[in-house]
Image 1: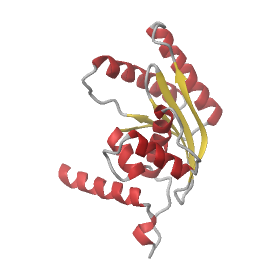
Image 2: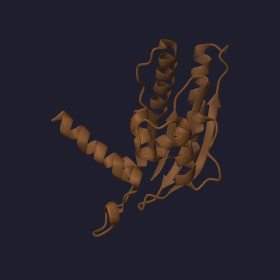
Image 3: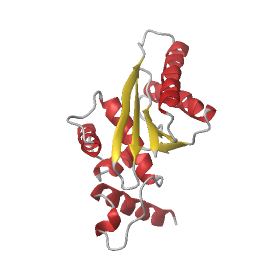
Length: 190
């Protein structure tokens, strides 16, 4: 499964593409950060972000798109910019008939590190480890985009079903932790 992950933002929008095999091995395909200067008019910034995302979608032809879910913060201006960049990304994906998976930051952290409150350095370190990279991608927006793509693939069935007798059902420790967290959350909703 090829997934394009997007860490939306107006100044820096992370874009990461990974291929994930049925055995959960992930391979880096592409990572970049779309940058727009704050002094540029908002509509021009959104246009640049849209063009950058469209170019990645067209060049790498992912089967799915993963996007960070916008959540409330104290800084309304930051939330608005993130939401606007998210809308541009969803539009570009929908134009190509691609479903968009929305993931919260804590969901992504739990999926990648096994701990929903991991810091950015921990996430970046695990992204590098999962992808077999010598060092974490920088800036953090790049690592976050890759983490989103990996999280989405691992959660959406790009992985093989557990084999009988495999330790932990064939899941990594982070995936085991995530599965347990999902089960716990589902029980609370009932």
